[in-house]
Amino acid sequence: MKIGIIGAMSVEVDALKAKLAECETVRVSGVDFFCGNLAGKDVVVAQCGIGKVFAAICAQTMILRFGVTHIINTGVAGTLSEKLSILDVAIADGVVQHDMDTSPIGDPVGLISGINKIVLPTSDYMAKIAADVAGELGVKYGRGIIASGDQFISSADRKRYIVDKFGAVACEMEGAAIGHVCYVNGIECLIVRAISDSASGEATMEYPQMVALAAEQSIKMTERIIQSL
Image 1 (spheres, rainbow, N blue to C red):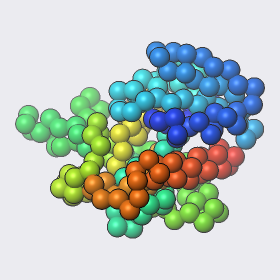
Image 2: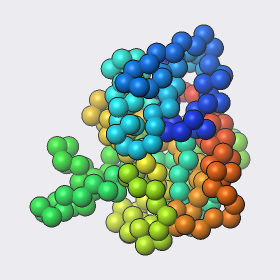
Image 3: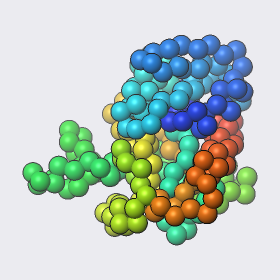
């Protein structure tokens, strides 16, 4: 087993990189891949950058260059569910690209051409482990669809659209691209995101502070998940 860990921002992965034993850094396509040992497992950690293209490049490189067998996408997300609040955790049962739209030629919104799927499955085995870890840590969580797109969602109207169209519980900008790459390569994939904002432009504290707290929650979850794999 070799586990790839991907976060979009430094705050989502820096604490994990700092815990790597016997760490070696390899730079590929402008991304630094930190290879080492964490919780007794062979891991590769990378900050991919924000957005679906960066995420896909990172995931494919982890598979082809570093031979990972499992990928965990850790980080933060906006909630789309009344059941998930700040610092709760969303665990993906599947992922969608909410900005994929070829409907003018007759396709359903969200359909990914070539594989003809809207919802891409994630690893049920890994999701169950994540749920168990959340329970052990006393973290409130929800399982469901996580929606990704190259948009920072801050509009109540857009939030309602994503919920109505896909039934998603959280939104972010990378998970579905990573899920897409894992699906076509036959790689086990987990998307686990701590909630940092309401995805509606409303906030109870400054966004950077919320991101830092949510990222800390996600990192804590990720480390325990790796121990349990």
